[in-house]
Image (tube, rainbow over all chains, first blue to last red; front, side):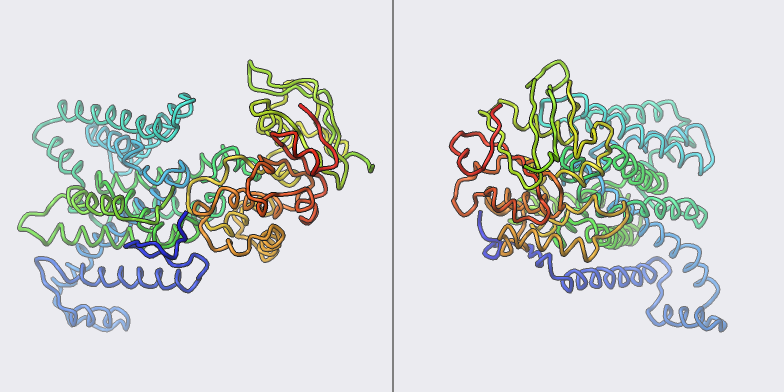
Length: 355
Length: 211
């Protein structure tokens, strides 16, 4: 056991007891998010300068006539802002649900992807697209698929006893995720190749290109509803990381708590998947990074995960739509950024996010 | 001896299809410390899990202050029993202070943050166990004995009537030995039941029960 003060770690975790250190991290993350929002509003085929944005904000705040051309206002209100809201909401949802799954399953390596939730939600949504259902029904199908996946995976892990529980959990998630992936493959094979198949394929790669203001009316409430129980139960979620026996001995109804937290996290993941397709790595890397900076206590982990997740996904989405002439799939980019970050954490972090 | 607080009558305990021990009867009075002696694997931990309600008794009754505890919910049990598990604490790097504070979980509502009273009780437990210097350290990075002390502090922070312990007295270094006196110093811990793997420790407590 080496004293923590002599660690040669690339990541310095502040003393957890210092409230000012935590506050500085939260303020820094919030400012970074704000900066990325401003950049995201300005960047794109229709370039807007910082002065334009300022003039727009002043006009909106004072109610005066906007000095910008009508086309610029349309770009800001109808295209850029909905997409920015969607990106931040999806990023926050994936990071928050990842943090919740990691605490609940007592393993910092689980994520919505690894537990098969994303694959289940994707299968549900593809069924919805295949049956040409309305948007809200696609979202409901996505939630049902995600919930089914996590229940099956957790059921398998609970049934197979006497082996490394975490290993069983992760393997079950991989297997069930593959099964739902096969279901998606079947539906793609059966889908109408001119209308449905391109829609399904594009959507599966993960993209916010097709977001319109109407999509936000189901995405934002779902994310908000999912965040509320996680925020309220933040102290109990910490106790759940000790395992069932200890949590019960400390007075928790672990069954009930697990159901509520899984439902909330799955709702957020499914809403995100329904809006944007499969965007991997955010739910794994962001909470991991947040835990390295502010420690495992959920009361700090949740806000920092939400801020970092929102900022990260918005930054990646802005890169996705401005880097090339053709928009890049978001899921491809998060994987391209997430893999090296995660490997770096794995190799060089002397202060493990768990032991 | 005062009236018994914890009464165990003709208890059989174990897992479904596998009875670990049977015919267990003893009482523990207020302010009393009872050592449960038994070799490794003889079922000390299983007995404690049964007292805590983590396992259903196969037969017999458990009473606290004369009241059978069979139907108690986890919260009521937590407000009565403190638990020091053998390999507890989980794997996330909470600080020792955060871990001890978790001992207060049953004292507040499901959404409530720890109150000033909760923090005070946790601080007091940390001071009683003499681990103030570890409070800001990460729980996963202190020594095995220090971890066990943190778990004892967590149970003490609960200010419970009965303390069912893990392998408390097996800890090596003299400074880390949790004695009956330390436990008695914990605020309001007026009954303690400790498991000990070795007969040697019979001397440190006034009464013992051999499994």
